[in-house]
Amino acid sequence: MATRVLIYGVLIFWAFICLFPIYWTFTTALKEAPDVMQGHLVPLVDFTPSWKGLRSLGLSPDTIFETSTVREEFLKRFTNSLWASLGGSFLALALGSLAGYGLARFPYRFGPMKNDDIGFFFISQLILPPVVLAMPFLVLYKELALLDSLPGLILVYTLMVLPIVIWIMRDQFHTIPVELEEAAFVDGLSIWGTFLRIVLPIALPGMVAAFILALVLSWNEYFFAALLTGANVQTLPVMVASQTGSQGISWWSMAALSAAAILPLIIVGILLERYIVQGLSTGAVK
Image: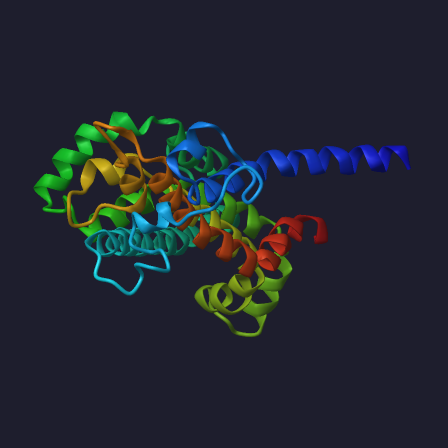
């Protein structure tokens, strides 16, 4: 009994540590400047909530139906982030699923490198600091006319998350018994038919987990979004970072923007929770 209480106590404490930044962000969006500087935390106890943060974006109840250039800019950045993240994540999932299936089912040899070495090569690309790629990407995108374009942002996001998607999907396909595919071959299905009709439905939880991870990484990405885009395709993280000026940081505006960036990911996580749990428990089921 004492052990169980200790475990639950540690889990509750860890949950508090993980959730407190989100709570702090949402409450800061409801504060005035003095409340931010004095570190007030509890609404209606330490401070009186206000709509200053949302009003600065044209999203407060008293400004939502009025014309607002700031709100239009926010919606534009939000839409850019949405399309770039979804496009990059879906493309990475499609390519990563094919690559992961190939590494899990077919023997490859590239010089001295075999399947495990190739898989490690993919994941090792995450070690490379993004700043090292700044100049090559700028030159390449300028020559291809992809600077400040949505397709260019989707491509760089795909390249950014593809290694982790390949790694996850390879392990996911390893958990699926080969006998299921052999039985499908006996029934007359081709390799593509087996992959599409047998393997992918079973691997769906792992695909959803990989997609969510890719989506989170793409949605929060700042470096390439600031480097390769201009006024047309800048994303929400770039707008969050721009809430500074000669008079200091607009904490309430930054918090409101951050809350708007966090909320979609929370909704996606809640809606797809059961697939994430299934993806994590697949290995145990086997």
